[in-house]
Length: 179
Image (cartoon, rainbow, N blue to C red):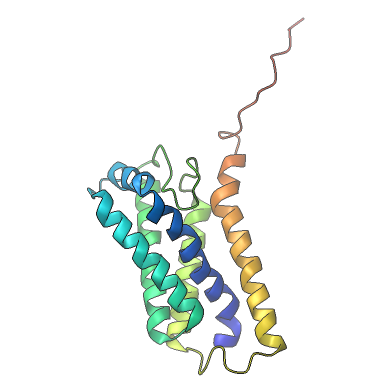
């Protein structure tokens, strides 16, 4: 299963790092998002969870194993549940700050992506690699490249796509006179 799921799993682990670092630096967007979804939290608790998120992502990237994959799956299941809750409540006004942008609200694409990341991590947890980075060869390099592409596309879906929706596009053109 590792051969099939390695690229998406490594992308999911990498996204934990990329999304966790901005929350370590500034946890307030996530604090606001959680409170807006009815989850009372303190800034320091959010920062601590962000540190754990980054550490988990690094661990899963460096030494993918049954335990690392299980925890990555659990993290993405929690993220999926949070996004589902936010969407069910009509969405939050701001974003969680995962990608350092102030305006990346939860979307259905976000929900699908986090659920797929959880599924991929579960597949790796069920059938982990024997030795993930032993004997780096062409296939390993291809898998790593595949993971980078998947991670980049996932970032595009989560951070860029929501800003291109009709509701998010703000026109700066002057109104044209009628008649």
